[in-house]
Length: 436
Image (cartoon, helix red, strand yellow):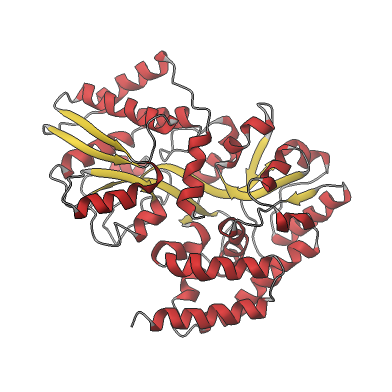
Protein backbone atom coordinates (compact mmCIF):
# COMPACT_ATOMS: atom_id res chain seq x y z
CA UNK A 1 0.00 0.00 0.00
CA UNK A 2 1.54 3.35 -0.96
CA UNK A 3 0.49 6.95 -0.56
CA UNK A 4 -0.62 7.39 -4.16
CA UNK A 5 -2.74 4.24 -4.31
CA UNK A 6 -4.40 5.01 -0.97
CA UNK A 7 -4.70 8.75 -0.72
CA UNK A 8 -5.51 9.54 -4.34
CA UNK A 9 -8.01 6.72 -4.78
CA UNK A 10 -10.14 8.40 -2.14
CA UNK A 11 -11.55 10.57 -4.88
CA UNK A 12 -12.82 7.60 -6.89
CA UNK A 13 -15.17 6.68 -4.05
CA UNK A 14 -16.96 10.00 -4.01
CA UNK A 15 -20.53 10.37 -5.13
CA UNK A 16 -19.63 12.96 -7.80
CA UNK A 17 -22.22 15.60 -8.48
CA UNK A 18 -22.37 17.67 -11.66
CA UNK A 19 -22.23 21.42 -11.38
CA UNK A 20 -25.47 23.21 -12.02
CA UNK A 21 -25.85 24.97 -15.35
CA UNK A 22 -25.86 28.29 -13.57
CA UNK A 23 -22.55 27.64 -11.81
CA UNK A 24 -20.87 26.31 -14.91
CA UNK A 25 -22.17 29.12 -17.08
CA UNK A 26 -21.03 31.90 -14.77
CA UNK A 27 -17.67 30.26 -14.11
CA UNK A 28 -17.07 29.69 -17.80
CA UNK A 29 -17.85 33.31 -18.54
CA UNK A 30 -15.35 34.45 -15.95
CA UNK A 31 -12.75 32.06 -17.30
CA UNK A 32 -13.17 33.46 -20.77
CA UNK A 33 -12.58 36.91 -19.37
CA UNK A 34 -9.37 35.71 -17.70
CA UNK A 35 -8.04 34.06 -20.84
CA UNK A 36 -4.64 35.05 -22.22
CA UNK A 37 -3.53 34.76 -25.83
CA UNK A 38 -2.16 31.35 -26.79
CA UNK A 39 -0.68 29.83 -29.90
CA UNK A 40 -2.61 27.19 -31.81
CA UNK A 41 -2.01 23.77 -30.32
CA UNK A 42 -3.53 20.44 -29.44
CA UNK A 43 -2.24 19.87 -25.91
CA UNK A 44 -1.51 16.27 -24.96
CA UNK A 45 -2.59 15.91 -21.33
CA UNK A 46 -2.05 12.71 -19.34
CA UNK A 47 -4.12 12.56 -16.16
CA UNK A 48 -4.17 10.57 -12.92
CA UNK A 49 -7.97 10.48 -13.00
CA UNK A 50 -10.29 7.92 -14.51
CA UNK A 51 -12.71 9.55 -16.92
CA UNK A 52 -15.95 9.01 -14.92
CA UNK A 53 -14.50 10.47 -11.71
CA UNK A 54 -15.75 13.84 -10.43
CA UNK A 55 -12.35 15.47 -10.81
CA UNK A 56 -12.12 14.35 -14.44
CA UNK A 57 -15.56 15.87 -14.99
CA UNK A 58 -14.41 19.15 -13.45
CA UNK A 59 -11.18 19.23 -15.45
CA UNK A 60 -13.08 18.59 -18.68
CA UNK A 61 -15.28 21.57 -17.85
CA UNK A 62 -12.22 23.74 -17.29
CA UNK A 63 -10.66 22.56 -20.55
CA UNK A 64 -13.91 23.20 -22.43
CA UNK A 65 -14.04 26.73 -21.03
CA UNK A 66 -10.44 27.32 -22.05
CA UNK A 67 -11.08 26.08 -25.59
CA UNK A 68 -14.14 28.30 -25.79
CA UNK A 69 -11.91 31.26 -24.97
CA UNK A 70 -9.12 29.93 -27.23
CA UNK A 71 -10.64 28.00 -30.15
CA UNK A 72 -7.13 27.45 -31.47
CA UNK A 73 -6.24 25.36 -28.39
CA UNK A 74 -7.72 21.90 -27.88
CA UNK A 75 -6.87 18.95 -25.64
CA UNK A 76 -6.12 15.31 -26.25
CA UNK A 77 -6.54 13.66 -22.85
CA UNK A 78 -5.31 10.25 -21.74
CA UNK A 79 -7.10 9.24 -18.53
CA UNK A 80 -4.57 6.89 -16.95
CA UNK A 81 -5.72 6.58 -13.36
CA UNK A 82 -3.34 6.28 -10.41
CA UNK A 83 -0.39 4.84 -12.35
CA UNK A 84 -0.16 7.98 -14.44
CA UNK A 85 3.45 8.83 -13.62
CA UNK A 86 4.64 5.30 -14.36
CA UNK A 87 2.73 5.21 -17.64
CA UNK A 88 3.89 8.71 -18.56
CA UNK A 89 7.52 7.84 -17.95
CA UNK A 90 7.27 4.75 -20.16
CA UNK A 91 5.53 6.75 -22.89
CA UNK A 92 8.17 9.49 -22.80
CA UNK A 93 10.93 6.89 -23.11
CA UNK A 94 9.14 5.54 -26.18
CA UNK A 95 9.09 9.01 -27.74
CA UNK A 96 5.43 9.85 -27.10
CA UNK A 97 4.65 13.54 -26.94
CA UNK A 98 3.15 14.66 -23.63
CA UNK A 99 2.69 18.35 -23.01
CA UNK A 100 1.57 18.20 -19.38
CA UNK A 101 0.34 15.72 -16.79
CA UNK A 102 -0.85 15.61 -13.20
CA UNK A 103 -0.30 13.38 -10.19
CA UNK A 104 0.49 13.26 -6.50
CA UNK A 105 3.00 16.00 -5.67
CA UNK A 106 5.22 13.93 -3.37
CA UNK A 107 5.70 11.20 -5.91
CA UNK A 108 6.13 13.68 -8.73
CA UNK A 109 8.85 15.53 -6.81
CA UNK A 110 10.71 12.28 -6.28
CA UNK A 111 10.00 11.07 -9.81
CA UNK A 112 9.80 13.03 -13.05
CA UNK A 113 10.78 16.30 -11.38
CA UNK A 114 13.78 14.72 -9.63
CA UNK A 115 14.81 13.21 -12.97
CA UNK A 116 15.01 16.69 -14.50
CA UNK A 117 12.10 16.24 -16.91
CA UNK A 118 10.09 19.28 -15.86
CA UNK A 119 9.56 22.66 -17.47
CA UNK A 120 10.18 25.66 -15.21
CA UNK A 121 6.88 27.47 -14.71
CA UNK A 122 8.38 30.41 -12.83
CA UNK A 123 8.32 32.75 -15.82
CA UNK A 124 4.70 31.89 -16.67
CA UNK A 125 3.11 32.32 -13.26
CA UNK A 126 2.77 36.06 -12.80
CA UNK A 127 2.69 37.89 -9.47
CA UNK A 128 -1.11 37.98 -9.33
CA UNK A 129 -1.42 34.23 -9.89
CA UNK A 130 1.13 33.53 -7.18
CA UNK A 131 -0.49 35.95 -4.75
CA UNK A 132 -3.86 34.27 -5.20
CA UNK A 133 -2.62 30.84 -4.12
CA UNK A 134 -2.75 29.62 -0.53
CA UNK A 135 0.46 30.39 1.34
CA UNK A 136 3.67 28.45 0.70
CA UNK A 137 2.26 25.96 -1.82
CA UNK A 138 4.57 26.95 -4.66
CA UNK A 139 7.53 26.73 -2.30
CA UNK A 140 6.88 23.13 -1.30
CA UNK A 141 8.58 21.50 -4.28
CA UNK A 142 10.43 24.50 -5.70
CA UNK A 143 14.09 24.20 -6.64
CA UNK A 144 15.40 27.59 -5.65
CA UNK A 145 13.50 30.03 -7.85
CA UNK A 146 12.46 27.31 -10.28
CA UNK A 147 8.86 26.08 -10.05
CA UNK A 148 7.93 22.75 -11.57
CA UNK A 149 4.61 21.95 -9.91
CA UNK A 150 1.36 23.89 -10.00
CA UNK A 151 -0.98 22.72 -7.20
CA UNK A 152 -4.66 22.46 -7.99
CA UNK A 153 -5.90 20.29 -5.08
CA UNK A 154 -4.71 20.48 -1.48
CA UNK A 155 -5.00 17.73 1.15
CA UNK A 156 -3.89 18.98 4.58
CA UNK A 157 -3.23 16.60 7.46
CA UNK A 158 -4.95 17.53 10.71
CA UNK A 159 -7.05 16.00 13.47
CA UNK A 160 -10.59 15.44 12.19
CA UNK A 161 -13.26 15.08 14.83
CA UNK A 162 -16.95 14.88 15.64
CA UNK A 163 -17.87 18.27 17.11
CA UNK A 164 -21.01 16.91 18.72
CA UNK A 165 -19.16 14.09 20.47
CA UNK A 166 -16.40 16.47 21.55
CA UNK A 167 -19.04 18.63 23.21
CA UNK A 168 -20.76 15.61 24.75
CA UNK A 169 -17.60 14.47 26.55
CA UNK A 170 -16.84 18.04 27.66
CA UNK A 171 -13.70 18.25 25.57
CA UNK A 172 -12.01 21.26 24.02
CA UNK A 173 -9.49 21.63 21.22
CA UNK A 174 -6.05 20.94 22.70
CA UNK A 175 -3.45 23.67 22.41
CA UNK A 176 -0.54 21.54 23.65
CA UNK A 177 0.33 17.85 23.57
CA UNK A 178 -0.34 17.70 27.31
CA UNK A 179 -3.83 19.06 26.60
CA UNK A 180 -4.25 16.31 24.02
CA UNK A 181 -3.43 13.64 26.62
CA UNK A 182 -5.93 15.27 28.97
CA UNK A 183 -8.55 15.04 26.23
CA UNK A 184 -7.82 11.32 25.96
CA UNK A 185 -8.55 10.87 29.65
CA UNK A 186 -11.77 12.85 29.36
CA UNK A 187 -12.96 10.72 26.46
CA UNK A 188 -12.00 7.53 28.29
CA UNK A 189 -13.98 8.61 31.35
CA UNK A 190 -17.02 9.05 29.09
CA UNK A 191 -16.63 5.54 27.67
CA UNK A 192 -15.20 6.77 24.35
CA UNK A 193 -11.77 7.11 22.78
CA UNK A 194 -10.30 10.41 21.67
CA UNK A 195 -8.58 8.96 18.59
CA UNK A 196 -8.36 5.95 16.34
CA UNK A 197 -5.74 4.47 14.03
CA UNK A 198 -5.69 1.92 11.24
CA UNK A 199 -3.19 -0.62 12.50
CA UNK A 200 -2.15 -1.68 9.01
CA UNK A 201 -1.65 1.81 7.54
CA UNK A 202 1.82 2.84 8.68
CA UNK A 203 1.95 6.02 6.62
CA UNK A 204 -1.15 7.28 8.47
CA UNK A 205 0.26 6.32 11.85
CA UNK A 206 3.65 7.92 11.37
CA UNK A 207 1.92 11.30 11.11
CA UNK A 208 1.74 11.26 14.91
CA UNK A 209 5.51 10.89 15.04
CA UNK A 210 6.41 13.30 12.24
CA UNK A 211 4.13 15.99 13.66
CA UNK A 212 5.57 15.61 17.16
CA UNK A 213 9.16 15.84 15.92
CA UNK A 214 8.27 18.90 13.80
CA UNK A 215 6.61 20.63 16.76
CA UNK A 216 9.66 19.86 18.87
CA UNK A 217 12.47 20.69 16.44
CA UNK A 218 10.81 22.62 13.61
CA UNK A 219 9.72 21.78 10.04
CA UNK A 220 11.58 19.17 7.97
CA UNK A 221 13.32 17.81 11.08
CA UNK A 222 12.99 14.17 10.04
CA UNK A 223 14.67 14.95 6.74
CA UNK A 224 17.49 16.71 8.59
CA UNK A 225 17.87 13.76 10.96
CA UNK A 226 18.06 11.37 8.03
CA UNK A 227 20.57 13.56 6.19
CA UNK A 228 23.25 12.61 8.75
CA UNK A 229 24.81 9.87 6.64
CA UNK A 230 26.42 8.24 9.67
CA UNK A 231 22.95 7.39 10.99
CA UNK A 232 23.70 9.16 14.27
CA UNK A 233 20.96 11.71 13.63
CA UNK A 234 18.43 9.18 14.95
CA UNK A 235 20.17 9.33 18.34
CA UNK A 236 19.05 12.94 18.74
CA UNK A 237 17.22 13.09 22.11
CA UNK A 238 14.21 14.54 20.27
CA UNK A 239 13.66 11.20 18.51
CA UNK A 240 13.50 9.33 21.81
CA UNK A 241 11.22 12.00 23.28
CA UNK A 242 8.89 11.66 20.30
CA UNK A 243 8.92 7.85 20.54
CA UNK A 244 8.09 8.02 24.24
CA UNK A 245 5.28 10.45 23.44
CA UNK A 246 3.85 7.87 21.05
CA UNK A 247 3.80 5.33 23.84
CA UNK A 248 2.11 7.85 26.12
CA UNK A 249 -0.82 7.95 23.70
CA UNK A 250 -1.48 4.29 24.45
CA UNK A 251 -0.77 4.68 28.17
CA UNK A 252 -3.44 7.39 28.36
CA UNK A 253 -6.01 5.29 26.48
CA UNK A 254 -6.10 7.70 23.53
CA UNK A 255 -6.79 4.68 21.31
CA UNK A 256 -8.81 1.56 21.93
CA UNK A 257 -6.49 -1.40 22.47
CA UNK A 258 -8.17 -3.25 19.61
CA UNK A 259 -7.17 -0.42 17.25
CA UNK A 260 -3.80 -2.11 16.85
CA UNK A 261 -5.55 -4.85 14.91
CA UNK A 262 -7.79 -2.60 12.81
CA UNK A 263 -7.46 -3.07 9.06
CA UNK A 264 -8.40 -0.05 6.97
CA UNK A 265 -11.16 1.24 6.95
CA UNK A 266 -12.32 -0.35 10.22
CA UNK A 267 -10.75 2.37 12.36
CA UNK A 268 -12.29 5.39 10.73
CA UNK A 269 -15.71 3.77 10.77
CA UNK A 270 -15.68 4.05 14.58
CA UNK A 271 -15.80 7.84 14.15
CA UNK A 272 -18.89 7.67 11.99
CA UNK A 273 -20.48 5.26 14.47
CA UNK A 274 -19.89 7.60 17.42
CA UNK A 275 -17.36 5.48 19.35
CA UNK A 276 -14.33 7.67 18.62
CA UNK A 277 -13.94 11.44 18.65
CA UNK A 278 -11.39 11.82 15.87
CA UNK A 279 -8.37 10.80 13.78
CA UNK A 280 -5.12 12.37 12.59
CA UNK A 281 -5.48 12.03 8.82
CA UNK A 282 -5.94 13.89 5.54
CA UNK A 283 -8.83 16.05 4.42
CA UNK A 284 -10.27 13.18 2.39
CA UNK A 285 -11.76 11.63 5.58
CA UNK A 286 -15.16 13.42 5.61
CA UNK A 287 -15.80 12.40 2.02
CA UNK A 288 -14.80 8.79 2.68
CA UNK A 289 -17.16 8.61 5.64
CA UNK A 290 -20.00 10.57 4.06
CA UNK A 291 -22.19 7.53 3.46
CA UNK A 292 -21.70 6.06 6.95
CA UNK A 293 -21.72 9.33 8.89
CA UNK A 294 -24.64 10.84 7.02
CA UNK A 295 -25.32 14.41 5.90
CA UNK A 296 -25.78 15.85 9.40
CA UNK A 297 -22.45 14.74 10.84
CA UNK A 298 -20.84 17.77 12.48
CA UNK A 299 -17.24 17.69 11.22
CA UNK A 300 -14.44 19.79 12.63
CA UNK A 301 -10.68 19.74 12.41
CA UNK A 302 -7.78 21.24 14.33
CA UNK A 303 -4.02 21.35 13.99
CA UNK A 304 -1.70 18.96 15.77
CA UNK A 305 -0.96 20.86 18.98
CA UNK A 306 2.28 22.45 20.13
CA UNK A 307 4.88 20.60 22.19
CA UNK A 308 6.10 22.28 25.37
CA UNK A 309 9.44 23.98 24.74
CA UNK A 310 9.34 23.08 21.06
CA UNK A 311 10.62 25.23 18.19
CA UNK A 312 7.87 24.28 15.73
CA UNK A 313 4.54 26.02 15.33
CA UNK A 314 1.09 24.46 15.47
CA UNK A 315 0.29 26.54 12.37
CA UNK A 316 2.84 24.59 10.29
CA UNK A 317 1.04 21.97 8.19
CA UNK A 318 1.82 18.64 6.59
CA UNK A 319 0.05 18.63 3.25
CA UNK A 320 -0.33 16.62 0.10
CA UNK A 321 -0.83 18.31 -3.25
CA UNK A 322 -2.12 17.13 -6.56
CA UNK A 323 -0.17 19.04 -9.15
CA UNK A 324 0.05 19.88 -12.82
CA UNK A 325 3.47 19.30 -14.37
CA UNK A 326 4.64 20.49 -17.80
CA UNK A 327 7.21 18.29 -19.52
CA UNK A 328 10.46 19.94 -20.54
CA UNK A 329 10.24 18.03 -23.82
CA UNK A 330 6.80 19.47 -24.61
CA UNK A 331 6.63 21.24 -28.00
CA UNK A 332 3.81 23.34 -26.53
CA UNK A 333 5.19 24.11 -23.09
CA UNK A 334 4.19 27.80 -23.16
CA UNK A 335 0.64 26.97 -24.21
CA UNK A 336 0.38 24.27 -21.52
CA UNK A 337 1.64 26.74 -18.92
CA UNK A 338 -1.01 29.25 -20.00
CA UNK A 339 -3.72 26.65 -19.50
CA UNK A 340 -2.37 25.77 -16.06
CA UNK A 341 -2.38 29.41 -15.07
CA UNK A 342 -5.99 29.46 -16.25
CA UNK A 343 -6.78 26.32 -14.18
CA UNK A 344 -5.46 28.01 -11.04
CA UNK A 345 -7.83 30.95 -11.45
CA UNK A 346 -10.74 31.51 -9.08
CA UNK A 347 -13.57 30.35 -11.38
CA UNK A 348 -11.70 27.21 -12.46
CA UNK A 349 -10.91 26.38 -8.86
CA UNK A 350 -14.58 26.79 -7.98
CA UNK A 351 -15.41 24.09 -10.53
CA UNK A 352 -12.81 21.71 -9.13
CA UNK A 353 -13.78 22.28 -5.49
CA UNK A 354 -17.54 22.11 -6.06
CA UNK A 355 -17.47 18.97 -8.19
CA UNK A 356 -15.10 16.89 -6.08
CA UNK A 357 -15.76 18.08 -2.50
CA UNK A 358 -12.04 18.80 -2.16
CA UNK A 359 -9.78 21.60 -1.05
CA UNK A 360 -8.41 23.80 -3.80
CA UNK A 361 -5.30 25.95 -4.01
CA UNK A 362 -6.84 29.39 -4.65
CA UNK A 363 -7.16 31.26 -1.37
CA UNK A 364 -10.38 33.03 -2.35
CA UNK A 365 -12.22 29.79 -3.14
CA UNK A 366 -13.81 28.48 0.04
CA UNK A 367 -13.97 24.74 0.51
CA UNK A 368 -17.09 22.60 1.07
CA UNK A 369 -18.75 23.02 4.45
CA UNK A 370 -17.33 19.75 5.81
CA UNK A 371 -13.82 21.08 5.06
CA UNK A 372 -14.42 24.61 6.35
CA UNK A 373 -12.12 24.28 9.37
CA UNK A 374 -9.39 22.80 7.20
CA UNK A 375 -9.66 25.73 4.79
CA UNK A 376 -9.26 28.13 7.72
CA UNK A 377 -6.09 26.32 8.81
CA UNK A 378 -4.70 26.33 5.26
CA UNK A 379 -5.22 30.09 4.85
CA UNK A 380 -3.19 30.73 8.02
CA UNK A 381 -0.43 28.18 7.53
CA UNK A 382 3.00 29.51 8.49
CA UNK A 383 4.68 26.76 6.51
CA UNK A 384 3.90 23.55 4.64
CA UNK A 385 5.84 20.30 4.47
CA UNK A 386 5.16 16.98 2.70
CA UNK A 387 3.59 14.00 4.44
CA UNK A 388 5.67 11.97 6.90
CA UNK A 389 8.20 14.73 7.41
CA UNK A 390 9.19 14.79 3.75
CA UNK A 391 11.39 11.69 3.54
CA UNK A 392 9.12 9.99 1.04
CA UNK A 393 9.80 12.64 -1.59
CA UNK A 394 13.43 11.87 -2.40
CA UNK A 395 13.94 8.73 -0.34
CA UNK A 396 10.82 6.67 -1.04
CA UNK A 397 12.68 3.36 -0.88
CA UNK A 398 13.96 4.03 2.64
CA UNK A 399 10.68 5.52 3.79
CA UNK A 400 8.44 2.68 2.66
CA UNK A 401 10.94 -0.12 3.25
CA UNK A 402 12.46 0.92 6.56
CA UNK A 403 10.95 3.97 8.26
CA UNK A 404 7.27 3.06 7.98
CA UNK A 405 7.54 -0.58 9.11
CA UNK A 406 10.07 0.10 11.87
CA UNK A 407 8.02 2.95 13.27
CA UNK A 408 4.80 0.95 13.09
CA UNK A 409 6.37 -1.95 14.98
CA UNK A 410 7.33 0.44 17.77
CA UNK A 411 4.02 2.29 17.67
CA UNK A 412 2.02 -0.94 17.96
CA UNK A 413 4.20 -2.22 20.79
CA UNK A 414 6.18 -4.86 18.90
CA UNK A 415 9.58 -3.32 19.61
CA UNK A 416 11.01 -0.72 21.97
CA UNK A 417 11.92 2.85 21.01
CA UNK A 418 15.57 1.90 21.56
CA UNK A 419 15.27 -0.96 19.08
CA UNK A 420 13.58 1.26 16.52
CA UNK A 421 16.23 3.95 16.83
CA UNK A 422 19.08 1.46 16.57
CA UNK A 423 17.61 -0.07 13.41
CA UNK A 424 16.93 3.31 11.79
CA UNK A 425 20.50 4.43 12.55
CA UNK A 426 22.01 1.27 11.07
CA UNK A 427 19.78 1.26 8.00
CA UNK A 428 20.37 4.96 7.37
CA UNK A 429 24.14 4.44 7.40
CA UNK A 430 23.76 1.49 5.01
CA UNK A 431 21.45 3.47 2.74
CA UNK A 432 23.89 6.33 2.30
CA UNK A 433 26.91 4.02 2.01
CA UNK A 434 25.25 2.21 -0.89
CA UNK A 435 24.90 5.51 -2.72
CA UNK A 436 28.48 6.70 -2.42
